[in-house]
Length: 413
Image (cartoon, rainbow, N blue to C red):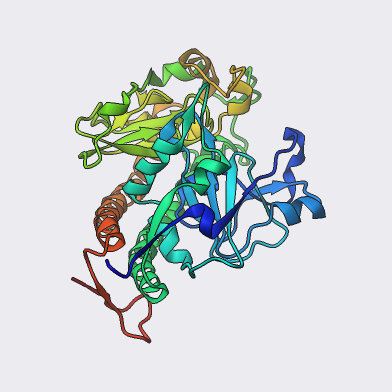
């Protein structure tokens, strides 16, 4: 540790603001790195999905290059500001969200910084706690440029930074592979859902696609639907509740249970609110996120919770909710908001029970495999997060062969 040196971020990085434009300028044009891209990943995604109608001047002032750090600068709570994501490559003609700040290494910076090392360093609980102390709270939590510049961090030699980063990145590659498997399996299930419940091409009694083979269709308030189906309110297939807020002192650094918000994990606590398998969506701030909870967790008050009325309704309800137009449900003024009532009243098509059961059986194995993957992801994530602070404090050393590839064995002691 005697060779480790402390620097404030302002000594190493220039801090810049992101792009703010009217809502009608999004969805087309050039690459746009969203708040969600930054919040959800240690490192920016290879191919961000966001698009914005940006011009050359904006692309220069809000560019994203290899080594850049993006930090969320404002959100509903202190726990959601200062979330970081590091660019491992240049993003051509790209810009980034105005709710984020960009940190770009100074040309005369006193040390070299490894992108992998800083990516993990900024996700340590120590840094998260430091950010919370530097953030301010009025109607929203925020982190300004001067606060960011004053945050102190410890750096070892550049070679040790690289070794630490590679060690942790090995674990992340395995985690990401499992996540990709899960995404593929969900896409398969979603394709079947669309085929059966949107295009109405579920198999009829003869095994033929229902609609295209002449199956009877009837008019409804949502358009034509198969004969025997009904249009019901979403509350007829699920029970809906809200999560429950936690006070700041109820967050526990080494808590056993995750606190889940609209964007995912917010921290840990020593008790859980539910251990049921449930469907979660954002209630305030971030709308449109939908995911399944399969383990004991604490659900924050910025999520809405859907519990399907029967097991056979579960995956149908999940994919039905993912198709909702959350923008149309927004009833917020100062920030996006949907209420339990908003969600309950949404009209949905309800198939006959035999078809629901058949769909559930068809996709259940895919999701069960996904849940097993999630358990392995959790184990690897805990290993990474256990190693992370110890490596960052110099309590562990890493030995890596010079020509070692990411898939080879890394010894940590």
